[in-house]
Image 1 (cartoon, rainbow, N blue to C red):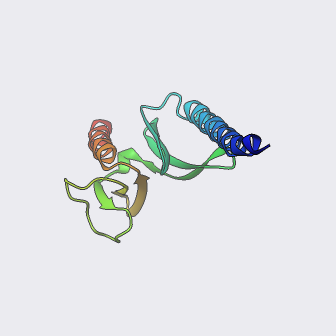
Image 2 (spheres, rainbow, N blue to C red):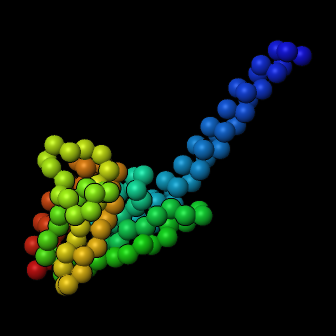
Length: 136
């Protein structure tokens, strides 16, 4: 009997990891469908973003679907800034890592797109500015 009780936490852990893996696989499959045909796309802990037909849109994964948060027309893009996620309007330094946000400025609007990785955000910043210049 004692041996059976020792295996119970392992069984519970296995079932929990299996369920979490299934949920992540489902999220990635939904993302793959959502991002199909996009010129640029990302999925991370902060959410998903895609550039499709000149419109950048980003979403959060909620209740088994991607819920769109906002969108921004790239041809109206004037400035892209890399900002710290939680410290107000503090720009992120080149050495900084971790969670951050891209601030998109254009047509009198300022919109923030969250990122889990500063390096990926820097790559997106360069690609978005290049795309905005090409579309003008």
